[in-house]
Structures are given as C-alpha cells and as structure tokens.
Length: 140
Image (cartoon, rainbow, N blue to C red):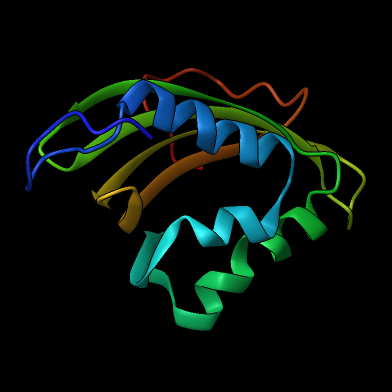
C-alpha cells in the first residue's frame, strides 16, 4: 500500500485499507484475513473476550466455515493517528437453525505499518424478519 505518513501515524490509505479488508471478508479468505495481523495482535470483542496467537489465526477461517453464505459490506468512517474506524453490515444463514442473521457492527483497527496490532469490534445481530418495539434503546 502507499506510504502516506511519518512514523506514529498511518502509512496506508485508510479508505483503501477498509476496501481491502472488505474484499478479503467478501471472499471468505481465512488465510488472508489472519495474515493482516501482527504476531502480537489482539482482537477484542464481546464481554471481555479476545483472540490472540493461534486462536486469532484460526478465528477468520472458523467464522467463514460457520457462516458459509456470509455477505458483508464494510464502510470507512474515520481515521486518526494509527487508527482506522469502520462499520459493517452483513447477513448469513445460521447453520444450526437455518435462520437468516443480519448484523451491524463497528470496528477500530490500530495499525503498525500495514499490519493490524489491535482490533476492537462491536456488533448487534438479529434474525431477519424479527421486529422489535423501538423504545429508543436495545436490550438484546
């Protein structure tokens, strides 16, 4: 990728970075997704959950094996320092129930050069067709 900034700041085009991440996830390429992380990288998600080391390297391929028909679109939102922020929308079939699951999420990528060393994800998932009362907040 193109070198744009000095040390301590992004050295990649942040919009192109998100497009490349989207491309890899749309292709459901677990090896390419795992290769984007530094050896000491950590992915934070859920309630105190994290992927590191071998678990992180296996996570994308495991996810793609589970969500075999995953469709995902990622959108660049902002950047600053060594951080790129984005959002995503996705859909896949839950292999256990056959239900279509829809998701919206947000993520922060912290980069060292072209590699992600820290990744934070937040998401909300729901079954297609479920219509919850809109009370201005979510408890599910």
